Image 1 (tube, helix red, strand yellow):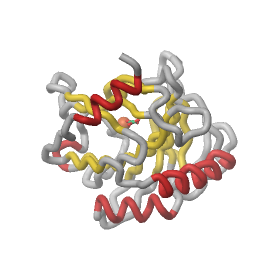
Image 2 (cartoon, protein in one colour; image 1 turned 180 degrees about the vertical axis):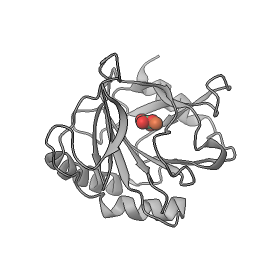
Image 3 (cartoon, protein in one colour; image 1 turned 90 degrees about the vertical axis):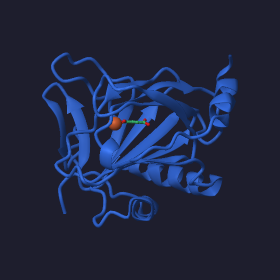
Image 4 (spheres, protein in one colour; image 1 turned 135 degrees about the horizontal axis):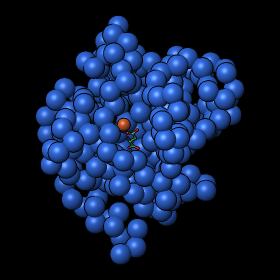
Length: 216
Ligand code: SIN
Ligand code: FE2
């Protein structure tokens, strides 16, 4: 089946809802998506994408990454961590675009702003293995994810790696929050469906993950 058909078929299935999962398909309209891409272009001009590598093995991730916000998440041979500066330029990360701060307030209602916005770029072959987001000291705050560009098949499990998993599409403009019992759920990206969006000129997918790192 062609990627576009898989995309259509997946989107026709009802979004799975459960305690801790907020899925808001099409939360950002096309104009909002375009404005966000323009803001992210500024972010990337200041903080270029880099290729993270797995701790110890040094195996490169298939996604490219950058960050905005007071803290950014990085992965290198020394481990996973948050740091206030870009690993290659040494400069502070640029600020989180105001529209994303407003989205965080509107969707999470959390009492403090996010400190980190991880920006992942997926080319047609990129994916992300099942993992937990657990490098944050504040686990009370939700994770907020925004998808732009080509649709991804996202996989969500539970807090144990062996928990049952379900997969569903994250398409351009979709917003998802993981909170409470799913804050530490394993999750990943099985694949990208190339050619499913015209938002990014050269194709691919951007995913933004906003996180609070330190308790307020
Ligand atoms: C991540 O978990 O870091 C990315 C998830 C996504 O790309 O949707
Ligand atoms: Fe993650």
